[in-house]
Amino acid sequence: MVLGLFALVLMLGITSGLKAQNGPAMYFCESYGNGGEVNISDRFYTGKITVMVKCDYALGLKDCAIQLDKYNGYGFDYYKKVDFDVTADMKYIYFESSDLRVDSPGIYRCFLLDNKKNTVASALVEFIR
Image 1 (cartoon, rainbow, N blue to C red):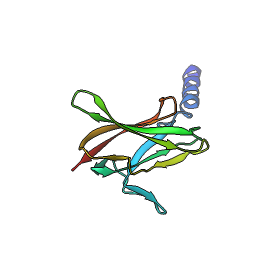
Image 2 (image 1 turned 90 degrees about the vertical axis):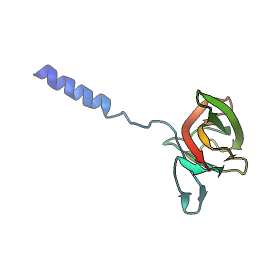
Image 3 (image 1 turned 120 degrees about the horizontal axis):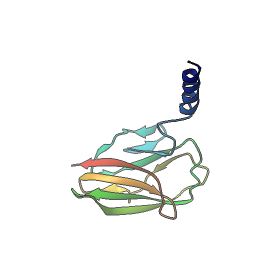
């Protein structure tokens, strides 16, 4: 009985610090303005896209990039990379550029890469016509 109670207390102590999302979250919207994100989704018409990254801590990035890879039915092929300059203290970043657009429908894997090409965050997004 005492051993069972000890195990329960131990498990509660361990799992109380676990969170489903403990790093940067990436998501997408049509645009970002004074009112915040406009039309958050994971499915868009081809064209311009805004990539959002949100985190509980400063990301520590200066030079970074958003890379898109297109699903070809078997794996992913490189589609494009757009470079951005941000400040290291940012926790909430929107990436918007005239170059950040997709003109071919399909499923894309999107990455936020640091200046050493390490993945900081990633997500999937679909584009339709």
